[in-house]
Image 1 (cartoon, rainbow, N blue to C red):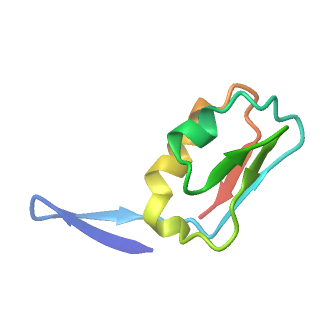
Image 2 (image 1 turned 90 degrees about the horizontal axis):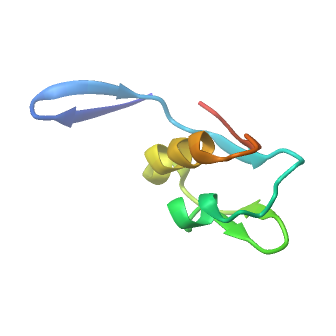
Image 3 (image 1 turned 90 degrees about the vertical axis):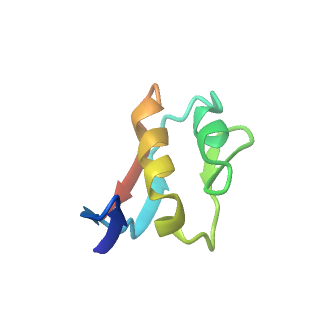
Length: 76
């Protein structure tokens, strides 16, 4: 767990430890446009290797929420 301090208020932010794509991607490109540092789209979407997910946690969560087929998954 990471602690962030914004306006002198401590916020608990869960660390994302793993990101993956389940079967069924339609290659719409929303994940890549939301967070290109983590996702790339060819014929389907892929998760880029070697990325520090903590730096992009909010964008990863946003991409998962925006995914029209709900195939973006992550663990905290």
